[in-house]
Amino acid sequence: QVQLVESGGGLVQAGGSLRLSCAASGRTFGNYAMGWFRQAPGKEREFVAAITGRGESTSYAESVKGRFTISRDNAKNTVYLQMSSLKPDDTAVYYCAARRSWYIGTNVGQYDYWGQGTQVTVSS
Image (cartoon, rainbow, N blue to C red; front, top):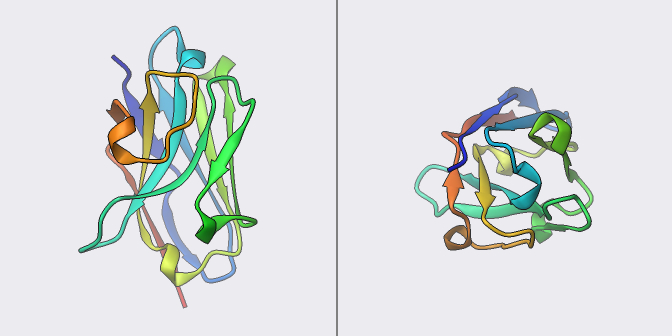
């Protein structure tokens, strides 16, 4: 099993930047594709970004392309989400997720382990 802990959320102004981190347990972090999802109040959890086990490729939701960047440092068992040009619509709880595969998934059901989430609030 993998334990995930997100950090870095907070309150930022529209147009600002924020970097989220997700620290993972385990000895085989590189075997897991990692994803970021977000959930606003009253809405379904939605895909944001994902990265393959060793960072060979990435995938992004259309709504965040060009603004968000996912990366990972397997030596630190950590995945990051760099967010820039933030909009009020980006306000949500952001969740880190791990998949028992090297390859990317874009659906909630494709991920096996989840963090508790970190709140991101973007003010206008």
